[in-house]
Amino acid sequence: MIHLSLRTVFYLILPTILWAGNAVVGRLAVGEVSPLLLNTVRWVLAAIILIPLGWKVFRPASSLWQHRVRFLLLGFLGMGSYNALLYLALQTSTPINLTLIGASMPIWMLIVGGVFYAQTPQKRQLLGAVISLLGVVLVLSRGDLSILLNLELFLGDLLMVLATIFWAFYSWMISRTGNSDERDWPWAEFLLAQVVTGLFWSAIFTTGEIATGVLHFEVSPWTILILLYIAIGPSLIAYRCWGLGVSAVGPAIASFFANLIPLFTALMSAALLGEPPQLFHALAFILIVAGIFVSSKLSFKAAS
Image (tube, rainbow, N blue to C red; front, top):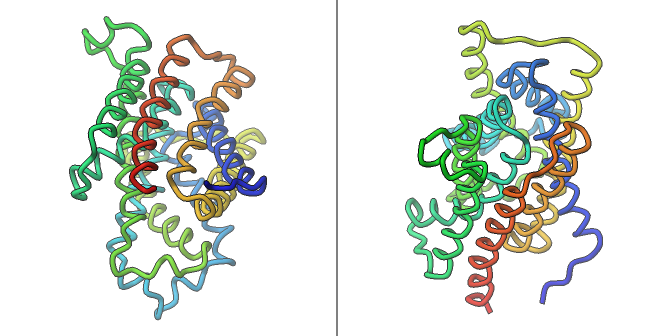
């Protein structure tokens, strides 16, 4: 039986609050900062804060250079693409929808593991995947079957599905380090390496906004606060606390705490955006969590 200390619970709950806030604040930024520029500025600020702590990772003798292709791919899947797609999705969808879709992450990890990493899922895990995916379908259809039948899906929701799949690949890469010694690095060096490579991709994506003439940045105290929040809270504090929490209890237990993100998002959306959750949100949440529980329960039994 795993004992959860109050400190560990704090480490696992605080990131879910900060990540929920990232989706809500990202929605507030619509019209203030173009989404791809928002992602780039976020990681520029995060890098500036991390450099005094993790600069040694860029020394010529660092093993980062031996694994530069791996980190370029990690940066693309994680920092570069995931949040860029999230901020793009928020242009046409709601934070509640997107965090519910994101909550299906363990199921996408199951699928990616089965297809690309030769991790054959067991029957109960497949059942859990189907249940959770039904929850995702419910979100995509907004509780209206005719939307699915007519393929009138919201672009933002589909972008979030893609973002979630990218993060599943990222998570598998993080768990399979190969001959990289990154697990022995100080946390700031490991995070900075990903932030900088992610920033490389973010900058490339942002040139697309420049080329199409949609790049914009409204300078105001409100915009500055938004940028400081997403650079410090979801980008640094959340990653650090989550790492400490996962180290204490393992990824399986931690994944259940991640399901608090849609709940905190619903509360923040109602308070800050005037977007209260609908009935289909509650039903989708139940299906997604039930599917993850069914899949995870089998893993716990197999390990005992």
